[in-house]
Amino acid sequence: MSVLDGIRIGLAQFDSRTGDVDGNAERIGARIREARERGLDLVVFPEMALTAYCLGDRHKERSFVERSQAALERLAGECRGVTAVVGHIGYDPSRTMRDGFFGRYDSYSVLGEGRVLATGAKRIRIDDGVLDDSRHYLPGEEVEPHAVTIGGREIRLGVLVCQDMWDDGEAVRPAEILAGKGADLLVAVNSSPFFVGKWRRRLATARRRVLETGLPLVYCNAVGVQDNGKNLILFDGASFALDGEGRIVRRLGRFREELGEVAPGEAGEPADPEIDRIRELHDALLMGVRGFYEKTGVFSGAVLGLSGGIDSAVDACLLVEALGPDRVLAVNMPSRYNSETTRSLAAELAANLGVRYLVHPIQEVIDRKVADYERINGTRPRILTLENMQARERGNILMQYSQELGLMVVGNGNKTEFQRGYATLYGDIIGALMPLGDVNKLDVYRLGRWINRDREIIPERVFGIRASAELSAAQSVDSGGGDPFDYWIESPLGVELVENLRSPEELGRAFASRSLDPDLWTADPEGRTVYDKFTPEEFERQARETLHAIRASVFKRVQAPPIIIVSRRAFGFDYRETLL
Image (cartoon, rainbow, N blue to C red; front, side, top):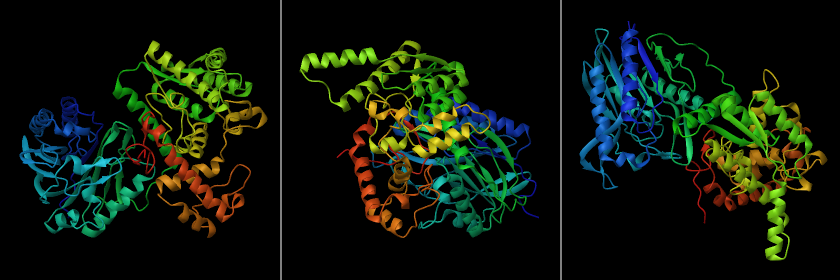
């Protein structure tokens, strides 16, 4: 008989509100009471549940940290008849960090019997992407299991704080240390940032710890949206329990709060669940849009430009699903270059979604601005200037509706356009949020298809027209004009260069050996592959050109709205760039 047999554990996927110590403590307390009422023996909360993980430099505010310590003591008083593990900021006023402020830790406490039974801290810090542990925390010093009485039995909990579980290649191996000191159960508390496919990596890492130690493991992850001032960082939940052989006992839901019961003493299932990549992407973006809107709390709805193209169509669908059609205003802003095709598609989509739809023409304003420019300068603006004047006028109109109606402006740019700098400052680079800013163009089309999986919401013709900004006669979709890129080349090149960090030379060698990832480098609608379009020398030259465009357009991305991280590396504070 295992010491864990019959033990009932609750994993509390918790959506912390940044800095709201009292509100978070109140909701954590409610979950603790619920766990007790349900007869659970132990309830586990995520890393930094009491304050949220993404706090910026609020870590340095002594009064804030002291309030969180007081809230933790109050929570301990709730823990009678149930034990809890809660993540929070650890506080040591006797220590001084390199920033000159008091000592801080990424800590957890074991609460029970109406008091704090034990406290520990993250041993392995991580500084990568959006994570800056060394800026905010000292490393934990002790790696010890904690003996608690649960169900009349003494159980030794080995708590791992996020990166402590990802100890491959580290000098310190916390899971093995805990097992060697007699832990009965590994308890991993996490605020693990999401990207598409991350869950598989977590599962594989957790399995390695289980197989190394022979101990079952419960993994509790945060859920919801936080930010670092530039990127919206998603936490997807998807908590789970593994038995002593690494099989899944139970997996909780994704992208939602949940108090789910797991029994790590039971045997798990032999097969892992399948996860559809585009559905995962859709659900993540939906949580990001909804969470941003609700947590900012300053808008009464959203407004976006609806052009008749795929990007604005997908954004409109996400907004309606996240906020409801009554909170979305769609505005079509045609100039002489916008075709009847795209105008009719925009109107049809708006009707399908049931949103308020306005047509706000811009041609008269553009004509006036061109005439003023000619009168003052004696020459007509260049074609590129004329194109950007249209984009900026559209941005100006959206901001007018935003201020008049209290709506958040949502920008329609995607990651492939951003990497090329194919976006106009103060025009389409505008808004409170850019939902597709970390989604490559081909995945935007795939999202549209997924949205239409049950019925036609996005008109089918949207998928057939060539992507176009419609800013000049040469970009007319009715005559086959459009954006000056082959997105079946540009999209995967961006993934390779930014997310996979591959060099043009490395890509050239992979092309020559025909070993590019076939799941990434797919055939275009005519069935032509990348190998049909280039020689090896031409392909490497194309990769160099795209990399140059990425580096030349940083100044635009610095001024872009926040984007939702859904990839391995997003522009912003995740994939960090320099202007010079």
